[in-house]
Length: 178
Image (cartoon, rainbow, N blue to C red; front, side, top):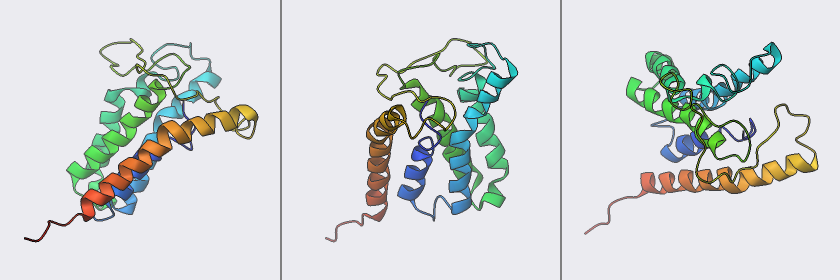
């Protein structure tokens, strides 16, 4: 998995790129939390959940159904997020689903249960270019941690920054006068 530091890259890029008129700060924060939320399943490691099952890491919390549920909850909370329900739904769905997508690009792990509850099959991206991180934070300042962070900068943060910048340019573009 990418580190907890990197999963927010997608919602941050989209939120900053679209601007606070479309993605208000509360919704931006909800998107960041939603992008990290699927990794709550690591609690299962401490509880002895069997690896590769639907309740293990990269199981149901990394599925599109889970992203849909989180997005629906935020759509119902749209008023408190200071945004229309459809905007909350779409933004939080993409933010949550981005977690599993990023994890599928890592070069380790069991794959992602994108289609749970319809299938327990685990999927990988066709290119597994992101260095997988260890669970926990103590290793981040090691040589391995620096390798993982460098990989995330190249394969996640750089494309996310380009996405955010592109959205910002598109938003600020004015029609040419005639």
